[in-house]
Structures are given as C-alpha cells and as structure tokens.
Image 1 (tube, rainbow, N blue to C red):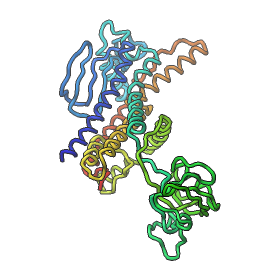
Image 2: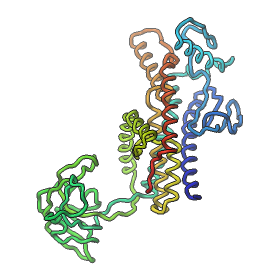
Image 3: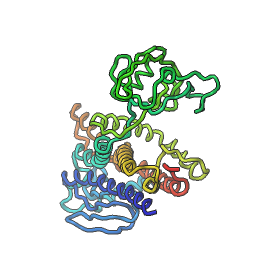
Image 4: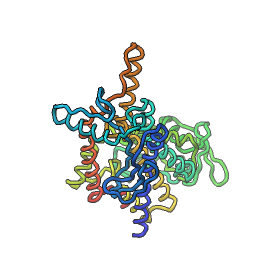
Amino acid sequence: MVYYLAGALILFFGLLVSIALHELGHFSFAKLFRVRTTQFMVGFGPTMWSRHKGETEYGVKWIPLGGYIRMIGMLPPRKGDAPGQVRRISTGPWQGLIESARGAALEEVGPGDEDRVFYAKKWWQKLLIMFGGPAMNLLLSVLFFAILLMGIGTNQPQPVIKEVAECMVPASAGVTECPANAAPTPARQVGLRPGDRIVAFDGRKVDDYAELQRMIRGDGGKTVPITVRRDGGEVRLNVPITRNQMYDLEDENKVVNVGFLGITPTSAIERQGPGAVASTMTDLTARTVGALVRMPQKMVGVWNAAFSGDKRDPNGPIGVVGVSRIGGEVAASDDFTGTQKVSFFVMLLGSLNLAVGLFNLIPLLPLDGGHIAGALLEAIKKAFARIFRRPDPGYVDVAKALPVTYVMAAVLIIMGGLLIYADLFNPIRVTG
C-alpha cells in the first residue's frame, strides 16, 4: 500500500509540476512583454494557498485539474469603444453574453494600463505568450525522453539468439504450438542455437537486431550465408530464408508475407544518442496527433467502458485520476525492477507532456491554440493591409468567438468528468 501511494503521488505531483511549468511558459513571456498579470494559479476552484508578490497573486487551488494565469485585457473592447468603455447593444442572447464577458474583462483595466493589456500587444508578442505554455510541455517531453533514452537506457533487442522456433506458423493462424506436419524453421534446419551471436548476414556486418530483422525480411526465398559467434569461435552457415506471414513492423494489425528465419532475440538495456531522441519524438508526435484526431471516437469508447462495462482501451484517453492509479500499480508491482519502474514513470510523464502540449495547440478557444490562431489571423490581415495599402485593421476581436468558446469549454468539462468517472470505476490497468 505504501508503494502504491508513493507511485500515485509521484505521478500526481509530476503532473502538477508540469501544469505549473506550462503556466510559467505563458507567464514568462507575459512579463517580458509587460502584460499585467494578476494571478498565477495551479488548480481550479477555491484557493488552498496564495501569496502576493508585486502585482501578482501566486497560489494553489483545491481542484488539481489544470491551472491558469490571469492577464488583463484578454478580451478587447468593441472597435470604436474607448478603452474601458462597453456600449450596451440590444441583440440576441449570444451577443449579450459576449458583451458581458467583454465588460468583465475590461473591469480589470485601470488607469495607466492601456499599454499593458493583452489585446493591444503586437501579434507576434501575443503568439509567443500563448505558445509559451505548450512549448514548455513540448520541451519537458523532449527532456523526459532524453533522460529515458540517453540517461537510463531502454530494453533493446540484440543480435543474439534467445530461442529457436521449432516450426513455421503463419501469424494469421493464431496458434503458438506447432500444428501437425508443420515445416521446421530455417534456423532449426541449419542448427542455429540459443546464445549464438549473428555477426554477419549475406556478407554484411550486423550491429543491431533491428538492422538484422530488416535484412531477413527482405531476403525471403534466398539462401543466405550467415556468420555466428559461438563458444569463442565463428561458424558460417548457409541458411534458406523462407517466406512466412508476419505482422508488419510499422502496423501491428497488418499481416505481410516476408522473409523468415525463426529466432527470438535476447534483449539488454542500452543508452542511445540524440538521434534516437529525435526519431522517438517524431514518431510519438505523429502518433499523438493521430490520437487527437480520433479523440471523439475514443471518447465513445470511454463512455462505453464507463457505463456498459466494456474493457478500457489501453491506448485511449486517460485523466489525472487514471494516471495516478497507474503510477500506484506500477510502483506496487513485483513484475517490474526498480529501473523499469523509474523508466516507466519518466516515459509516462514525457508522453503526457507531449499530449498536453499538442492538445493545447488545437486552434479553438479556450485552448491556447485559439489565441494563437487569432494572433496569426491578425498577422495575415495586417500583411494584406500593407500589401494593398489599406488602413491598419488593428487587433482581431477574439470575443466574437466566445459562443464557440463556451461550447468547447462545456465539452472539455464533460470529457474531464467522464474520464474521472471511468478512471474510478473502470480504470486502465498495466498489471494483471
């Protein structure tokens, strides 16, 4: 129980620190560009603790599901109004909400603040202020994966044979035992043994298993010379590489007909270089973007798991509660070594920061990406005005997007509540 609680708290506070650093990214650029920032808060709801320093209140709130900084003038006055003035107009309910929000935002603007409001800043300054938060998460993700890959190391397959398969079994067969009259594997035919290190394949030096695997799969139907190191000496064998149905290396749900040898490699912890960090981040970014695109479909699965008892998708969305539970399970499990537990925590925090950073870049308010989109639109409008020698169009009135903001905020609240419920009553588990 102690280990479970420790693991849950490690991930919980790791997420809180990530949230605080996200807000620090916004805060740093806001201060740099002299936007008056009245609050820096981690969490939502009632305040647990706070302290004023200068013009900013720093604090922690009771609901640890996010954070925010409060900058004055996030919503601009309607064009034609003087700073601090909000004209009342008789329109529909949405316009009334917009004007109420506009008025509430401008109430914080005092005398002398005209140059310190967010909306009056240059477009590139607004872009940097809003990109600062997601950028901090993306940098944290790179840092965590650099620690994992370059500092701790990961389990990597080696060109050393751990097991030799007895017979040829297609991946589509769905069985692990040899069926009657199954042909022996090429490795079994030529007498490859556990412990053999493959040092050369078809005249090419072998340095790692991934390279060897690609060569084997590409040489189906050929008889290939292989050199193995065995008992201090070298043995040369001619191996008939047959073709077999195997799962694709890029898509584990796809079956392909490729070259087959019939060996299982050993593995060892290896530290990797910056190139591995770059390729890992590129691959994870592509996967995470794809997951965000499929988010609505994935949330249907979360709903079914929460209320219909379906099994949770281990690759589906997860909330703060679920992440903390996973941390507790891993810390309390006897199935992982100490190094594996540390690696798992670092990997999970890196993955979560990447997901949070990319999610916040979605170009919809109230996410950071909505303000970034507004800043970019302002830049485009100003550029067109210069090209066609028209008057400066001024700032983009993001307040007009508030109806979409309210809908998006409601969706985010519902999603968050659904994830908490599912994480409590049908959580994702990483141990048996």
